[in-house]
Image (cartoon, rainbow, N blue to C red; front, top):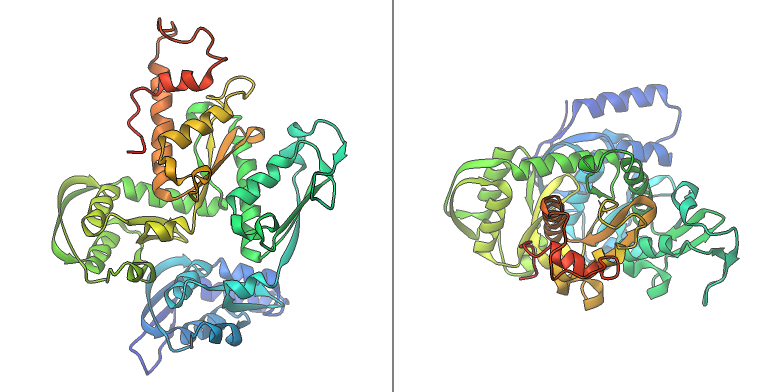
Length: 457
């Protein structure tokens, strides 16, 4: 292992042995310079173990530069504009976490507006505002995703557009702009641009948005491949790389695991988080910046007594005992305790397979979206002024939803309950049912959902 110590603070920064060995091998075999963009991105994907206790974050950045053998620079002008110097302390204890994720958590502790970007052969530590001033461009081949949606090879120009695109592909642009950083696109005053032409998708936006677009397209492909399996094997998929979806599955299992006895009597929140993290073997962090905004410190007391409860239940009632606006999310390989307002600023995009529920010709997608909007937190959707969005994607047999983690849990329970209800329904229609279900799909589904308890109440 590589150990780095600084005299000003009692700190140990431990870099995983695998990362150190890999870096040595790369230096010996890879002729690419430390500024090569692909090499920087590869280094950011390597696992790292960090044990930081009030470490100056500038020292952490220097440790990353040396241990990962990449060029790292601070955009000092941008950081000065928000009043951030290199001496601000950070505390983070994580094991075998991807370097990119660990760095995100370090920067978030300093200021939520700080980010990192691979630019001009360096990893630049800057602000989101500055990153948006330097747009990146990428071309995606989407022929395999849109083949079923092309009517002809005719190109049309919509009002206000400067370039043609194939008729029938509006759903691609709407899907991306409604679910990935909606405020960043030129249609609403942002800088991002999308052009679709000849089955190619051209995206201009800042780097993290382009990465998310790529993740969404790959998840659409995975969802389409899943349609070839029996419906009983279908699963909802977050719009993330496959490795990250595997990490999320580990957290989901941990949240569902049972805890035999929970005895918290006026226990500080940070101690509760530490205990639950150790018991569940997943990292649990406090989003202290968001908690500070609602006047909640790490020493706020928690009293909770439960038996044989899931970790999900313990967190729900424990946080509710402090403040009903608190929640938790899984982001960047940690479970983060935060506020609902903060969670709404970082929505999770999930693809839900519904090909078995929308009719043979897919005629009931809109009905399903309306039902989800009505049954699960109606005020949280965009048509009511909320942050959430839902869009049908028939080409991949799914509905794409951008919402908070908490609402996604309700949506998933809803779909499970609906499929269970449909499986138990007799084939004969009740006397008061509409004569033609196809004529009134919404009414049909309301009948099926009569006993579902997932409501907005």
